[in-house]
Image (cartoon, rainbow, N blue to C red; front, side, top):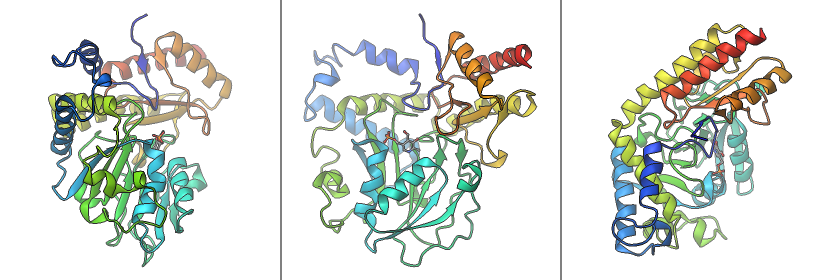
Length: 360
Ligand SMILES: Cc1ncc(COP(=O)(O)O)c(C=O)c1O
């Protein structure tokens, strides 16, 4: 069997060129006679891999010099604790709750201090992004937290919240590198890489230098202190070396594709194809308020759970995999990350049209 179109929300599709190149280098990386998996993280070869990966990411995102880039383990969920442990100097933080991941992050932070939920879209199953232009930001808040793209619900902040001068912290796991961002607007940008960048098992944290201090909550483990990793250039202990190597290849791929402006145009074109079809379909319908639609995760339903299940099953048989919606919302979800080609979305829409004709 050949490769399928994989619409998984994560771990997710990676660029074929990257996988092929990694396969070619599997037994002998660049004349070292070993795989990157087998190599010391203190070796010259690996030093070059991690330094190049960081430099390429800095170039892609135009990351200013006063921000550190950290390649860490523990996935995005570990940041739910690491952020309050490192940033809650006043033990107060404001959370905007637009989905399960922001909710989980807020509950975790509540273990360490006072969490104010200053806005939420839970009243309508997280199908929209609340107006965040004039929220009751807490005077003593150490930071304001958002999940910028809500993987499960398919919403995205098109405009960042007005934090009234407070540090913005954003989980960008499912929109990482999908379009240009202005890094200076954030104190911390972080994301698990297993959606848009690389293999599971690592998280990238981009953090402004003044937020990296020794003044962390008492009892914060060494491994969960940003300063540990910033001082050691992500080599305090054995890093997720193979993951960093694959991410580095994806950064090179993104540069060759024309960078984040080009990715944005490509992602908009792909998403438009699917959303336009959903808007005209008599069987399928998108579940998200139009203005807040994500370019990366597209949930949709027929309104009939049995028909949804039939669709997912028949789509799989047609080589369109992982279209089942998240267990908390049901229906379908197509994740169309950077590495999903336009042809993949075309194949999905063609299949949906056929399914509609047969089942309406
Ligand atoms: C937006 C978002 N945040 C956090 C997570 C959790 O990531 P991890 O499994 O790396 O902890 C996910 C998905 O898995 C996600 O989509």
